[in-house]
Image (tube, rainbow, N blue to C red):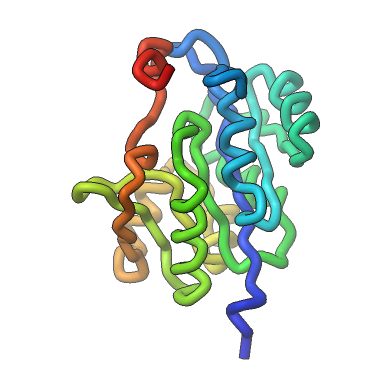
Length: 197
């Protein structure tokens, strides 16, 4: 019997997009003197047991920033084909020692460390569940997927999205209420940054 207290969770940060509407890769955008990627990595430290950053557009810059932050990066050469391809690359870059995976979007840098901690805590007690944070009845990011989904996602061929896969696993999904508005705050344009500054 697996001791769930020993389970570890990796984090996959999806940062491959070119940020066309934003004006450049969001991972490298700055808020309070830190890049989005730096804020997310800082908030995940001590909670995620490993962190993988998936880059695509301007990968060398993403790789350099990841190295500066002491986390590994992985290249998704198929990034123009959509976010799901980055998810597959990120999961493939993780070893098989993890019971679950945070799926983190780089355009959600305002998620608080306590939210990551709450998600992980709930997952460790329910390691067969997909955990999605909810605020005011709205689902947000990041989410945690259990290890059994990793192989399914990597093996999947054809066009799909994580949302489609989650829809097929609705009976194994748990919505975890949180107070953190950061789970809903995605940064799409430079204008979205102004209130945060």
